[in-house]
Image 1: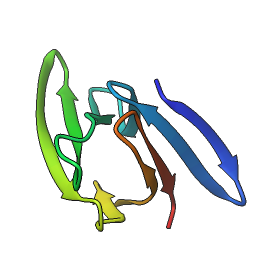
Image 2: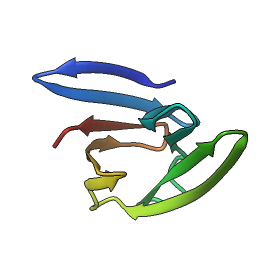
Image 3: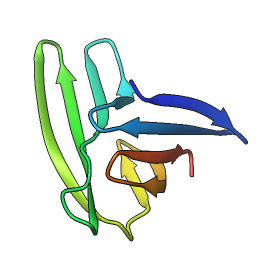
Length: 93
């Protein structure tokens, strides 16, 4: 799991490659966001992992570095910093 803390009313998350945060959770269904690194100098990658019961599926999304506003399952995130080793997100923009 990534490092999370609350500052100024916002949840902040710091994820190294392979670390994840739970975006949505329930009894049988979860949605997690995993930092998958930077495949090139101008793009970063986030993996979305969805679990329903014993079934799990995942896919990668690639974003340009200029993309700082993200939304998953109705939850908004602001990308504060991206490097090849980690990404810093702020939830609740």
